Image (cartoon, protein in one colour):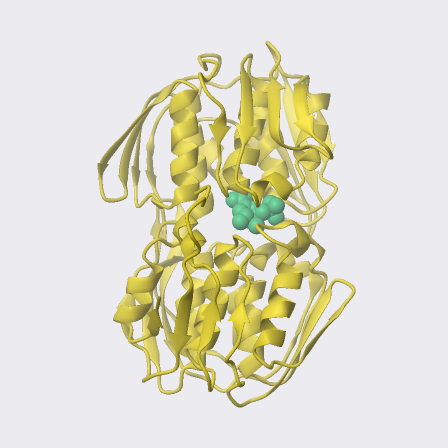
Length: 449
Ligand code: S3P
């Protein structure tokens, strides 16, 4: 969503307990990857449960512009007929990724590894985000950066080589987007492309590459949460397949925390993906005393999913170790909200990557807490929130800076503060959780323009 229209303020007001069940939308990370691997494979890919948020629709449009046939069959049901590795065409137009960091960065990996030329652009948020981290390894793989904005920002144009150069790349920051861009470019490299990450990040690209027929070897350096080496054998034949998208734990996080902080609530959140590289928030909340039960654990599309029964809970402050950040990188804004209701101090350590998300999330969260009378301090890259176990005052207006997760986190805050909380613009919620408003309203949450 380029979001040229007028801002859409929303206000959340405390009310009765939240009750009922919901199924959050499909996982954003998996939805982007399904579109991209659908494009790169031969034959038909059918996707069930795709997130039809603006970010993923941008990736779908880009896949189409690069040669795929992309068709919506029904709610969340999509069909992609790919062109296969080597079959991509030059897009006729700029690829406009709107707000989507993941879509744009992963597609840079695709274009950077194939003999095509494409220009990437996005909204004011995306234009601020660092792309050097993606361009650096791609240049080593033979990608030409035809043009870029200062500091490696979009709009930028890439021209891929006839064949990519296989490299071994140690990612400088724990980022699934960097890892994925290198692996996607490596698909067109003769030989083995290796990514070494010091801390394991979400592994959806590796899993899905295998599902489509690539050979990927993963070696863990240590216990879960530590590093991994991922080795992809280049130039496989990728074949279209069926993909079932589980519910997004990063979207589930908002009703989940709402149920914890609104007194008397009991909510069941269905089909949530429990990939251990995504469940850092649940681990942390349970350490804080949250009453979260994992029910009906089962397999859905190669991932473990569970229904989560969440009951309002008395929370206490904890220290969140920096090693946990990759498994909950998108969940710190909503964790800060939970921390505001906890008794004692919650220290979230090592949040430097939050500064380069859809907004500077560390600053945006701190400003939002301040506007609502919540005691906190930013110490370097750490966020420290102090609570006394009672509902904070609220009453503030929060600047969302084109960031969907800032908008949703502070609306959840307002469902339990003493005074209503307003966010200046809820439009970007449509990038990842288009049904957020009706979903929260159906549980009894009072959120309205
Ligand atoms: C994502 C990776 C994360 C995350 C983003 C989705 C992905 O970004 O914040 O929302 O799908 O690969 P980084 O890889 O930059 O940490």
